[in-house]
Length: 396
Image (cartoon, rainbow, N blue to C red):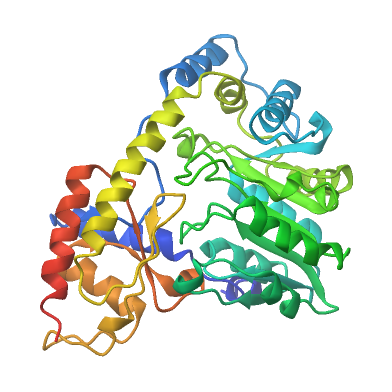
């Protein structure tokens, strides 16, 4: 059987692969602690669940408009005005089956074969693969732990060529936890003002999980707002990963293009989720704030534990719920039977020896690092890092 050559253009997400390996090991009876998946370990707040139950009882069970119900798009507009001081009309909003589909819609609507998409490293695993699916070319800007994993205006300027079409980034960033300040974004905007053909994809899915202050969106800068595609969703800030709802805010031309693409893939997203999302976006934010407070405590403890590991170099995350240490100190070391040659070996060694799952940095465009989530209980975080320390002490 000959399958499509499309399958050869991109890879399976390493985040999902490591979670799958962890599940398989757990199914064999091994106590595996999962620090690989980016999913809040909280349940969806009760008032949001109640709204979904009401929607079911009110028979919101039919097909939905491709970009989403009007009241949902109005709720997104209200949220963007309330939280970000951004003015978008409902017709500028497209809701999708998760922010991942929102990203796919944007890339497929914007990128042609040979177009260059500039992405600072490290980046979420799906960014580069979506560009490959669209037959675009990924242009990486290498950042480092020393510069807090942020791209500078000079780096962005140097990466731009006549084929540059899109600049794509996240803030807060998965996997590094980097958060761009208003001043840092303003520096990037000065570069984009000189290159009016570049569209900026701004992934803000971790907006509410911010440890350093107010979230800043690059869409706030009027000079380039019309060229920004803002991407967000409910998975992280509202503990609604399984509900699958993401959304974009953009100029009307791009919104209509993304709606056209989505119309042939999935049409409108789940009707019940949309009704629950209206309540989530316009209702009580205290449950989301409480989750961030707990992530703040876990971040503090995770960093304390990471600092006890010999050889690790770790940036203190400013947002999201990951630590992303440079683990290259262990490359070339061995326990007598296994030698750690790279980040993939490191992650597999921890899975098989410490029974802790993580994600190798190569998947994020950063081969010296490994991502560990702290979206797990404090007890499991403590247990996991004790196991990691014991396993790494065997490497000489």
